[in-house]
Image 1 (cartoon, rainbow, N blue to C red):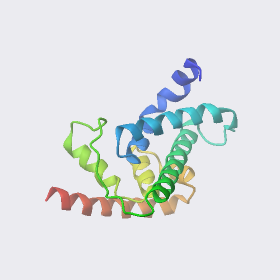
Image 2: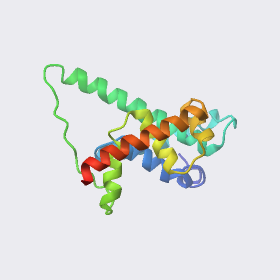
Image 3: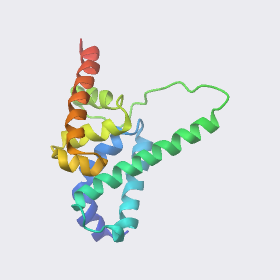
Length: 164
């Protein structure tokens, strides 16, 4: 991957790539693997960008799809590897946590959402319009509006339980 391509085409969108990768990983090692895989796939797929959507929309969609694919692979590997016993869900303290405790609580709550709902709320928090979120996720803008309201309610319940 050329340094110029990274600087001009990936780095300006690294914030959302980081947020999406962070929302789908529980450890620094996984985060770094996901981020690296996303950057590699953006570079490999750059010629497939047709310009039907904005570059940023394409980056969001690609990042989300890669993260979801990596999660599925990890689950399949874990199920195969641990077919004889159950893995306990351990929360790994990652080095990529923020010093702001309320932000950490929000990310912990977001991680409790379904994979698609995580993507929707992250895009909403990026202040993306419903139409763009719908384009990235592959549903109608009306569906996104309803989903966002339900997600907000769910997050409120999760956070109320942790804060109170």
